[in-house]
Length: 130
Image (cartoon, helix red, strand yellow):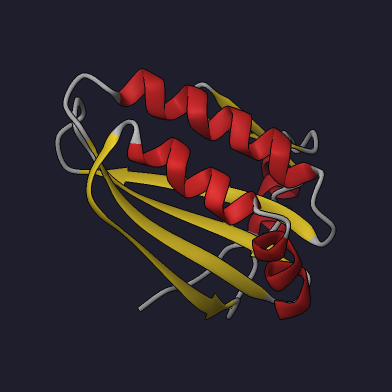
């Protein structure tokens, strides 16, 4: 399963704006055929974190279709409003998945995963990136 992996740096004081933008982009992504979900990871300073987004797709064709529908362009332009430096976007492949098993074992899987203020539905895969 392919993924778009984004690496961004949120400008100081713009974390809530970033969360709001991410939430709106998740809604747009759900309208794209083949979109499976997203994981948002933050590191560094809490007020100005480095963020890695892992957006999972059914196929490379689904990723290309999202690019052709201008979804990618919209996402980049929105993130530029609250991030600094260059957005680094790569395509990677899913190597392992354990979200379903872990959530079921904990007895709390509801079809939604919460990342900060953003609720992501049906994000069922873990990308291992080296």
